[in-house]
Length: 192
Image (tube, rainbow, N blue to C red; front, side):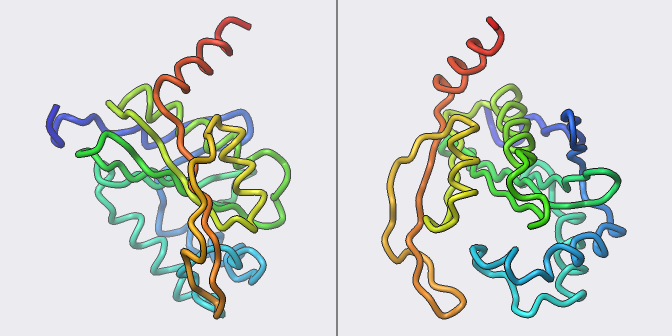
């Protein structure tokens, strides 16, 4: 299967509490509402401080323009507002994809990100010839590592002082989920 043969992922995924969909330019106000919270971005490398409206405009515009086959980034819509993002970047040559996500701080701890990330992982393994989906997070970001565990990923390695941002060095935990592990988990759920 060549790069051109890879099917595109769904541009819209409905979960019990969320609509995952492509970004629209009108989403910038919602993105700015959650991303200007400094606590929200403290574990996200590359987030500008302070986060200005222009940053939200640029972020949304870049996602509207992305080639969906190269990278898929879903806006997370909850109760009519965009409250975060889940992205999947395939590395076709290696048969893997990287999962990334973020959620408005006022919704942390409610299981929404696990719900969204699980939906994207399922979509990716069902439609793409992937061997593995991987993700990483700052080790201090316990909420993010819990999401990875809840979607079935296993801790593979911790890279010491791997990222430097906001004037500090951070360790990064890398997690992965193999296709056969996902298939076992999916068939166990189907049997219940």
